[in-house]
Structures are given as structure tokens and as C-alpha cells.
Length: 479
Image (tube, rainbow, N blue to C red):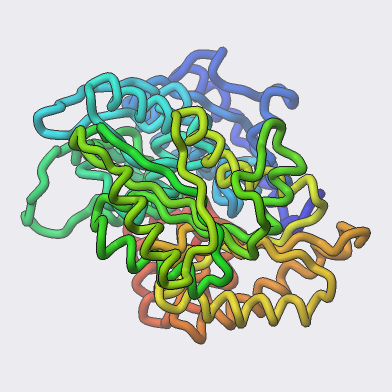
């Protein structure tokens, strides 16, 4: 199933390209066979199908730099690719002469310093492996995503990933201390500093975080670590309205502060389809509610958190914000509650077509956004089934709409741009963002022009022109 297939550039491949790449990484790591290349040309939503000359898999930063230099000499575009879990098409090539540069082999833990709460990892390490490396040193790397078993650190940096712990720890930009980057001319910038304070000029690393491979290729990073939680409490809470969820959020923050590490909003429709399609899932509450909150408290101290979370819930019940709640009494129960949230993205595809948005508004305006956007899509497509869920604690809502039951999938998906434009108008009125954590890539490139100030766009294009004057770094993405 394709959404919009962009025009594929049919650029010829310089006959020196493939032999040159093989001389750098070895014949085994230059993929040209159609079957071997195919998985790198389609992202998991199947919105786009790309094309390229080959896939190359370097083993270290020096090989990445040599590949970039060769591609520059032969005028071959480069599309960096991590775990291919991106959701906006930024990792897909659309040039028959392009080189997909896979970072999967750069997967080493270079160093870890528990006393400084920092570790240096290569860009090809999976997020889960980074979490495990931190845990082995009795530390926490808090970034957490549904795709953490397959997404790579380099991709997390390139898209400024968010996830379920942003409320307490920030997004990827807040978790990076230093970077190593191969620039568009093949030079290597070694900015792998584990400093918490460094005011020596411009903060260059933030140019590359969130740049989606359009300015350079991140090959390694120094990541922040935190004390490993010694105590956690998880609750699944039924509420009547997003306004009630917001009121409970403020009450929880007042009581728990930074100890409130997760606060996720889910609609009943989303819970229903998880219960329908995710084996072993069950409803934690005896009655049905329009909305639910997954709330988690964490502490680095070995202190009981049950009284804190019970106090929050008791206050919520007394004020009418909370209708019912279930507390996890074991690790197994905690995992079961998290499964209801984590499976929500994957099961939507089993309900037919789904038009998706990754938006953010100021936290206090989340209820207003949901009221206006839900009314708008229900009027636009009668019978559609909205699934608005996500990180309400930081204002980020994944506003997805499943097709009406029995509707034609292709006809529904064909309205993607129309529905996006309508939702984005609501976001704009509320001074929000059309991309909270997924990036711009190809999917939102045209929409970016509509929401960014001209001065912002001009500055972005000037930065792109300065760092990538030949336009070979992930062309056609972001700007």
C-alpha cells in the first residue's frame, strides 16, 4: 500500500562507485542484489518505496568518512539509515544512483563512566542495547520507545526521538552530551565531550540532533545516564475527559515532581483494539471509561512509593478526576499495563487504513486540541474511528484516525493530505507543532513551509547550504 510515491530520480551510477565502495568496506558489505537491498527501500508503514544504487555497511567512522569522500567525488547522493524505523520517510532513498549508508555495524560501546553518569556509544547500537549497557553499570538511560529493540541510537539522534519518559528526562536532545560526526566533505568532527557545562562558542551538536542526516552523519555519541530506579509504581486509571486527565497530571506533578516519570493518555477505542489484537492483553478495570491514563512514579531511593501514588489517586477520586484505577502489584502486572500502551501503534494497522499525526500543543491546551480536532475529523469523515493517544505530560499527541468499518482502505488513505491539513490548522491556531518527535523527512516537507516563519526557513536553508553545499546528504528531506 503506497501513500504518495515521490518522483524517483533516474541518475546514472558512476562505474567507479561500486568498486570504490568495495575497496573501502569489502565486497560482502556492499549490497547490490535486489533481494538484499529491498528491505532498505520500504519503511514499515509502506507509504513509500524507494530506489538506490546499493547499500553500504561500514564498520567504523574512518570507513564512513571514506565513503562520504568517494560519493562526493562521484556526485552520488548519500542516505544514512539506522534501524529503518522512521515514520516520515526520511531514511528512504529516491534516487537510483544513491548510496544507502547503513550504520548497523557501528554498534560498539566505546566507554562508560558511572561516576560521570555518561557513556559513549556508536550510532549503530540499538536503543535496547544502550539501555542494557547502562543497566549493567547500575545506571539508567531513560529514552524509551516502542521500537527500542530495532531502532538505532544514530536514528534516535537524527530525529530527536522522544518517547514515554520525556516528562521527566527530556527528549534525545536533552540526553546527548557530545557527538562524533562525519561532515559532508568527509571530515570527522570529534565532539565527544562528556561535559555538563561547555560555553566555548556555538553548540554545534544541536545542529545535527534532529537534522535527519541532511547535514552530516552521526557516528558516535556521549549519552547522559541517571541513577537506576530502585522503586517504581504503575497505575492504569480511568477518567471521563482529557480535562480530567490534565487535572490529575497537575495534581501528580505537585505531589511527585520529577518522580512522575510517565503520564500517557489513551482513548477507549485504542484500548479496545489492543484487547482485540494483542494476545494475552486484558482490561485492568471492571468498567469502561472514555479515556485512560498510564501513570508511573520512579525513585532512585529504596523507599516505598505506594503511599505517594495512592495519595494521588485518592485525591483524584475525591475531586472527581479519577473514576477507577488499577495498581501493578508485580513486575508481570506492570508489563501487562505497559503492553496496553505500547501495542497501540502496532495494532492500528489491523483495523484497516490509519491516517496519522504526530503533533504537540502547549500542555494546558491538549483538551482543547482534542475537542476541536475530534469534532473536525468526525465531521470530515463520518464513521471514522479516532485513536488519539500519547505523551500528554509534554503535550505530544499521536492523533491517528482509523478508517470507518467496512470502508475502502485506498479511498480512505487517499484523503491523507486533506485530513493532515485540517488537523494542522487546529494545531497552528493553538501555537503547536506539526512534528513533535517523528521528524519531517519527506512526509511533512511541504507542510513545513506552511508552518515555519520565512526567517526560520531561510536560516535552515543557509545552514544546509553551508554544511552540505553539493546537496548530497539525504537530498529531498526536511528542507
